[in-house]
Image (tube, rainbow, N blue to C red; front, top):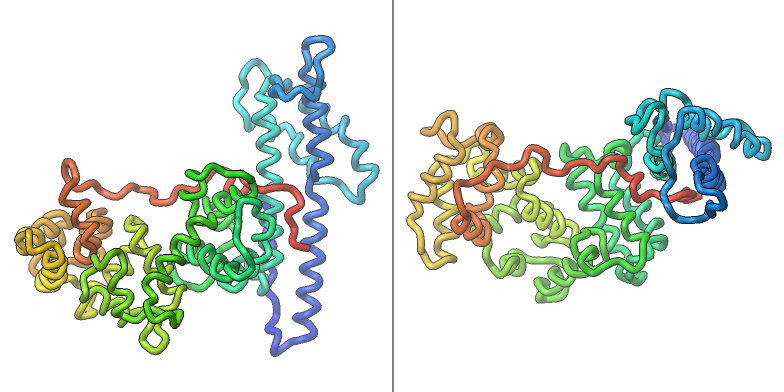
Length: 422
């Protein structure tokens, strides 16, 4: 896939050259988009593939049955059969790259010199969709850095939203929806907190695929409720935020946030959260609320564990001492009616993590090595997390190796043709 990275000069220092660079880059992106196969090309490819593989006389090529196996000679002849399309176009269409021998031999042979025609067609469709999405995202890369800032992503989602048929929201809620969608992407794809998301990383993640699922309408309710990017999920979280905002000033005080999750968070943890999170007159905004929710709901994510560890680290020395663990779990135990022996639970945590220096305490390195951070840390701050741990069957399980596996083909699986914002 081509890279569209081309750093733009500082607009304040070089206003004219910067403007010219941006205009030239936009034109280059438009040109790249026009070079890709369009719906006409793929309709023709599908039609010819059907013709090439027809065996029964009189079979209707518009019949939706799958394409039959494709021989090597059929495959190579496709370029000649489609060449006439280029006579009506400027330049050479990118579809030619799909009919090279090297492409044919990427696929397993189902018979001698024969591949699955449907697999080939779907591969080409997905690959084009990925390239289209990459170019579309690059239009929003204001600095030409090959990545998108939070503001760039907000603009992209804002302009994409009207094309999402299953996204039933009004203009008044749109800014909150944009914030909701962007925070998830930033949480998982900007783990280093650089304030930018790499376009290749976004393309190969599952998040664009989830977002593009909303192009289809109607969608089953179960699909909508499991998709973070659905209007149903966005409105659910926003209603939770409004329910906590007792004084209706649009922000959450420490007392108001203390009711989060039915008041099942350790009070000291809430205090630490307000100490370590950006606030406005000592109150949290909706963006911070979403970040907290993402951290608490994605306990296996490394960034969530680092966030929890930082809030638990009362001394700020990178070590969770035994007294620190006792302090936090004592509060959790109090919420549950002092049902458990605090020292016994703390012993379990030390046995689970197996720190290198047990007398000193638990470090983040110990957490990462033990792969039990998704259990050991949340049970110190969240009653529900501890109950889930206490009622489990069998020993505590290590976290999965791959927390968020990328979907094959990335955003291509849900991409569509001609999705340029221009």
